[in-house]
Image (cartoon, rainbow, N blue to C red; front, side, top):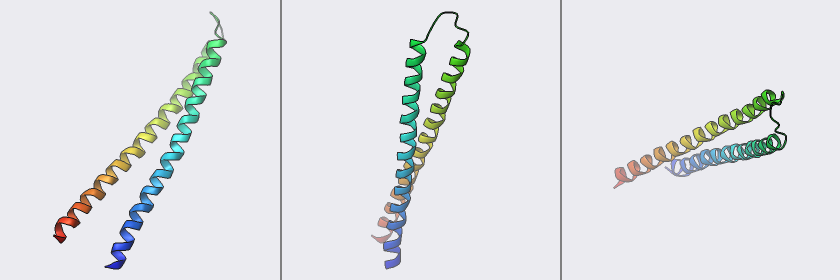
Length: 102
């Protein structure tokens, strides 16, 4: 019984610490990509000229930055959803154990 009482909270804590570290890394990547998008927009707004032949390449570069930002946001949302679902499972398990022992 002591093994279950000690190992289950340790495993749950380790799992959620891992998700927290992964979220921290993804948030850092998203912040870096947002800063890149802002700097790209600032540079493009300063360099803008009508009928510029480079506008297609500039638009493609901005599109690539925004696409990577969208991918990172999707990965971040997936991690947060996994964390929320995991907390729901843990909560249901705790309630079920509590009800079964009373």
